[in-house]
Amino acid sequence: QVQLVESGGGLVQAGGSLRLSCAASGRTFSTYSMGWFRQAPAKEREFVAGIHWSGRSIDYADSVKGRFTISRDNAKNTVYLQMDSLKPEDTAVYYCAAKRGYVVLEFRRGYDYWGQGTQVTVSS
Image (cartoon, rainbow, N blue to C red; front, top):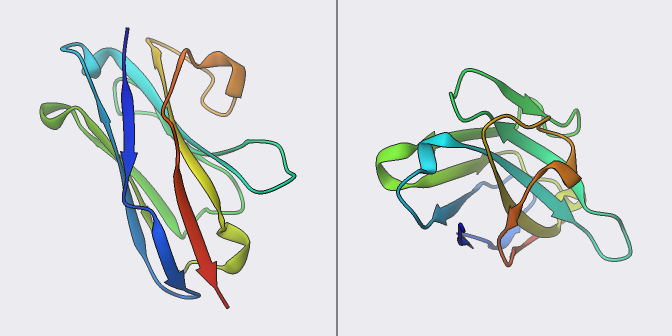
């Protein structure tokens, strides 16, 4: 069982930056592939970024490529999402997800564990 807790959300102006963190419980974090998803009001939850357990494979949604960066610190059991050049359309609740071992990073249903989400609001 893994518990995920996101933090770092908030209100920011367009063009600004935020860094989200997702802290995981347990001692086997390094064996988990991690993903970030987001859900805007009245929309489906969508893939944002993911990183395999090895750290060697990373993927991003086209809408955030070049602006967002995912990284992980296994010593701290934490995965990060650095969000730069934020746009109003990035406004959503951002969720962290985990899957032990391999997962198709953008496949929402492949993940076993989810955090409670953190709100990101980008004003124009």
